[in-house]
Image (cartoon, rainbow over all chains, first blue to last red; front, side, top):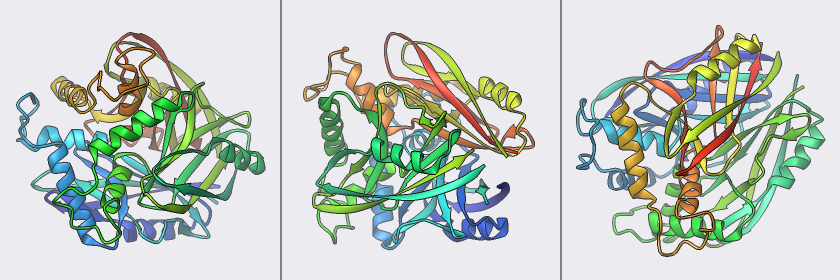
Amino acid sequence: MHVYHDQLEVRTHGKGLYEITDQIKSKIDKSGIQNGTVTVFVQHTSCSIVVMENADPSARRDLEEFFERLVPEGADYFAHDSEGSDDMPSHIRMVLTRTSETVPIVDGKMQLGTWQGIFLFEHRRTAHQRKVSVTTIGE
Amino acid sequence: MHVYHDQLEVRTHGKGLYEITDQIKSKIDKSGIQNGTVTVFVQHTSCSIVVMENADPSARRDLEEFFERLVPEGADYFAHDSEGSDDMPSHIRMVLTRTSETVPIVDGKMQLGTWQGIFLFEHRRTAHQRKVSVTTIGE
Amino acid sequence: MHVYHDQLEVRTHGKGLYEITDQIKSKIDKSGIQNGTVTVFVQHTSCSIVVMENADPSARRDLEEFFERLVPEGADYFAHDSEGSDDMPSHIRMVLTRTSETVPIVDGKMQLGTWQGIFLFEHRRTAHQRKVSVTTIGE
């Protein structure tokens, strides 16, 4: 049993879902771990990690539109807006989704279903460089 | 320290919460692990894993009704509907809840609170066979 | 590789976010583990564990207000209200957020981003004593 830590840098350019499945696979390959789990943790409070349908782009667009309506920018009761109208909604969207995901690894591969991909869900309008910590534990 | 992987198949017959706590307990017993964690991961993007109140069925019905209202079928902006009006809402409900849950194991038992059960939350109308991966890590 | 379990007791006095980052750090220090993960799991179905912005209190107040509006007390279709009008909303808010969070540990420290704190999100009006299980796995 051992632990292998690594880090991804993900460049985002506005709100939306950015797939990182392949980058995580590379880190697991580097770890040499065949059986265990990988924990993917994003070190920010204005974007999320989610598992999502990776085949049909329209599913991702509908998801983004849903969140635009559920947590609209500029609600009149928001006090936390020093970084703009997308600031507070980004924190709420993060809390409604996830900061981390843990996925089983069997025979060196993540046990994702056929349509599952791992995505960074960016909630800010402007370009960002996002840090994602990838921790593989196993044997 | 070691890793034990196993799989559950859960038959669902329409939207709702299906308790799987006992099946997970059985897998932990089979693992022989006394102290560590269990990660329960569902390999689909149209159902979820949640911890929920397991005593009063009315709490589960209210939860289901809340999600029917929060993410209604047939929103006019949904483009992803090739599998029917419950297709896109199922992905959104999954993102709003969880794909996995990690629970501590102490002395061979999950450290669940008195009223906590682990549930597969099905978001599709028709019958499905769901794969749930159960990974126990510990000593 | 080893496992270290410990428990926090968190006193809450009404709805809101209670930071527990420092208490978790103390448990990791006690574990002696330098590299691995910590899983923070709350043993209740009417409060949550979330990672949230820890600098500006107004961000937390806006988040609380958002949840008051998204899951209002006293919806006319709630059947589960034996413990009061905040009973059923507390379970829904828990399902919309998280029961646990897993954070990487590198060189004895949680790999939290600059603005990330770990919070217990209380959903009940009255005072509660909450049990949080802290499991550190690593080497």
